[in-house]
Image 1: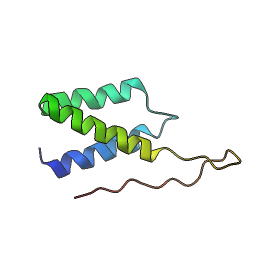
Image 2 (image 1 turned 180 degrees about the horizontal axis):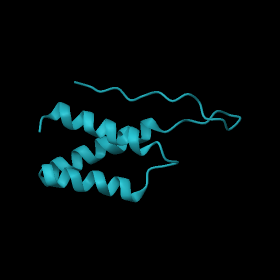
Image 3 (image 1 turned 90 degrees about the vertical axis):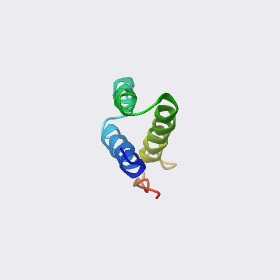
Length: 78
């Protein structure tokens, strides 16, 4: 699987996971298991870290009054 496709999948998984209140252990384990089926151990760690990064970036930030701000979507890098 190409690097571009894997990066896009990590971003897609993060967007889907953020639909809930937060990232659950089951969602992260799903992504990890998917990666283990496709890649070697070092690549799994790399792409799981990318997923974590996208998941963090996808969280809505709170303003001083506690309301979530409009979120910014993480951008794919080539």
